[in-house]
Length: 559
Image (cartoon, rainbow, N blue to C red; front, side, top):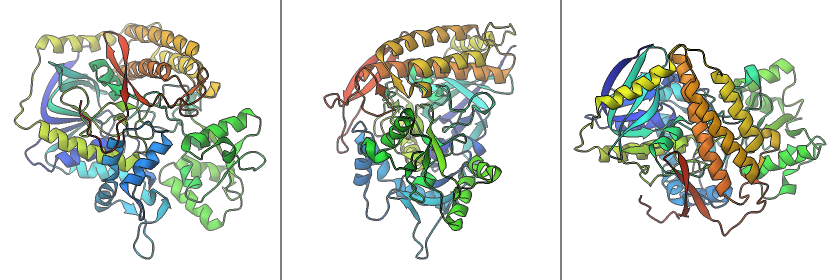
């Protein structure tokens, strides 16, 4: 199959049309003479982590709290390993972007005094089923924003150690894109699907994080030689069993306790009530044969039960449907909970690009925002908005008086030939799904997946490292019969690159700082002499480790 090559030029390219990407584009559009191109492999109307909606803003500075308090909270949750400067720059702007979203039509619940209704100390209630369509509608209304849907970006175009654009292909039409841009903002989100998921086969997509977020932005940065940080701070969500719906709606929304099969509250037996400990305690209770574990909802009033039904319809309808199908709502039966497989995501934990406060990566011309940007956990939706805005403003400054840089036609032809090689029409020995399932099995068994209680050790990680490398080599033999299958090949390749870097990060942090997130059987205690960021750079096929000192909120870091 031959591909048609299309060459496009723009001022700023936004890769990924999700939360941070849309907000970055809206910020950029305020400058009328700047042309913006947003590229999404799906359709921005319902893509990314906000596709199904959300029922709360989980990062907000409520009355009585300050941005400094938010930094302290994030640091405590991450056991001290955060970029305080990044978290602080986010915290100062959380309320501003929330008001902006309300002005776009987002329904934020208010009390009789007109104040936002809180759901927790840093959370407010919303009706957010339509949050993504609202964002997309606003983006599509701007004259200087062009949206390219159903186009998968595969690599950055790098010239003289500067990102000058990106390569991609249409997932339905036989088109290879070469997109030149004066600056690129990566907002592709984190990585799901690295590990064997809770639900097998037909239901494997029922996971906490968007199953279509494959770590593409990480992988492109890794291959381009960008410095990455904190992949070893994995995120594992505590979720409703089977539906993998969020539990915060019940835990925070109605104050439900975590209880075991005997309805005894158990989290307090395992330490501080951090996010990691609530998960770890649940895993341990099940190991001891004291499970299943639940959120205690039995006996709630009909009014509260109705609120829960509606809340889940805003973001995870499967949970409401399950209650209705079972004929047993949360007032009759406690809500069973379990941990998910691990994810690599910068919005809840700190995995991602190593950036400065302007969200510039270590490669000139490339910025990162949202889940793909590292160092700032607990940013959630509003934090992604803030980072999109910061990256946009920095890129506008960067492109002043710049012209598009072009590359040699030989380089373009080489990339097009690579894609066409995957489309030769030959039968490959292994299918895309078989390689992906093999990767998930390796990561589950040797790199601390669900089946191993999230625990790993050095010998297992070394085995994982070897096997992932073998699978990565095997991907050269994969073949696709159409553009959709070509997308599948690149998604599994990207996931394997993320696995490759993740394993090195897990090996390097010789301690257990976060229960379950990084449970190292060889180093079972926290080592406070190792207060460092674990960073890596991929060069000539090997992942090189860089240890960096902690950065406080009043420090100014520059690459």
